[in-house]
Amino acid sequence: KLTTQLPHIAFLSSPGMGHLIPLAELAKRLVCHHGFSATFLTFTNFSSSTQTSFLSSLHPGISSISLPFIPLDDIPTSARVETILATIVSRSAPHVRDALASLKQTTRLVAFVPDLFGSDLLPVAKELSIPHYIFFTSTCMALLFFLHLPSLHMTTTCEYRDLPEPFLLPGCLPLPGKDFLDTVMDRKNDAYTWILHVMRGYNSAEGILVNSFEKMEPGASEALKNEKDKHPPVYLVGPFSRSGLDETDEFHCLDWLDQQPKNSVLFVSFGSGGTLSMEQTTELAFGLEASGQRFLWVVRCPSDKDKCAAFFDVQTPDNPLNYLPDGFVKRNADRGMVVPLWAPQVKVLAHMATGGFLSHCGWNSTLESVSQGVPMITWPLYAEQRMNALMLVHGVGIALRPVTQEDGLVKRGEVATVVKELMDGERGKVARHKVKELQEAAISALSPEGSSHLDLMKAADQWMNSVKESI
Ligand code: UDP
Image (cartoon, rainbow, N blue to C red):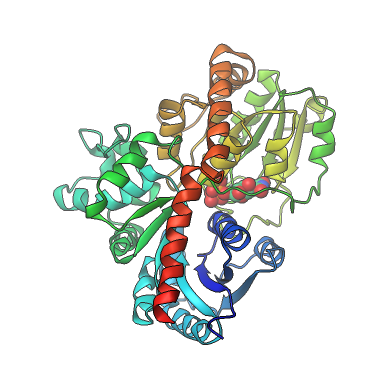
């Protein structure tokens, strides 16, 4: 058995398409270019129809196992997404142990690679003597934040938004407390305790793979490599973003884009889970209208209490278009298209007519925009998106940021101004030029001599060597 089978990797994706998508791309690359086979461990909890069809379309060299349902009856309904995710992952340890033990019997299992929420499961793999690495599906900056937050936690007691000085992470822009990862903004919330626990668990990984590349984050990536004695080795292996070939176009947005001039359309979308308040939906609608620019907007039902109300499933009983201002769709029919819930994002970004992306700055969306050379408008909502926005505007300079009021609202006039500037103004031109350069750098990072390809080879070699040692 051991000599004839391909070396095998077990990936674990915590619930949420934003985790599954990049992990699946990493798996595909290892299967297609590095001679591995793979199994995905996924969760029955919150498994959506989008997830099921995504898993069934994976490369034939990748199989999947759905772990048994994890009871969550004792978790309050008010719990944050992060608490739910970390609880599910932590409680799944016995199931993961069984799955890994059985894969070890039937395959040449050489590595266990959970996503960024999976650090609680690393000891399980260690017990079974399986090399165990984290795939960090976000930025180098966020990873540095994860690695350094425990010390800030020990030395401060105030809420982070009240910190008198920005947090100075090595190689990164100064990070004001108000832009910290959403999850840590309330130190009394269970989610904060969970995140600290997850972060501390990173030290038990044998390596951390990051979905970023050197040119995207020159300072942060160098800092991670320089402080290598302080944490497990870091491999910069990205950008992994989807090809989009499997995307379906239920609402014919691509046909509509075919009718629009080159670079003329702003794509507006808030990731797999993002939602706006009712008031913000109205302001955005009037702002897009006032901008006079063409737009393609993926609309969700508004939620006044949560910015990621659609995180576990985008489906809603209501039609989101009912929440748009009266007559909006009709008035804008000649230059705007609205799509409920979901669009084939990669194909839209790749389309000639798309010239800008108003995005919540989720990391996958950001990498997809970079991979297609589309400049952005930042509209961060949750998770690490404010940190991403900061880097996109002030670091690589590929995005413009609208001014937000004290209460967090972006008014219609500001929407119109920033949209016009991106699509038609000087600052938009500069951002477009910079994102094209970054697009080239992304292609080159993944090419056979590129930095990301070489880093992935290094990790793959470690795994291969672990098989040789065990034979
Ligand atoms: N996505 C999509 N169509 C949509 C909304 C989202 O295909 O209408 C995909 C998007 O292309 C990206 C992922 O969902 O690959 C969202 O991931 P991201 O990290 O940007 O945000 P998250 O959903 O994790 O907040």
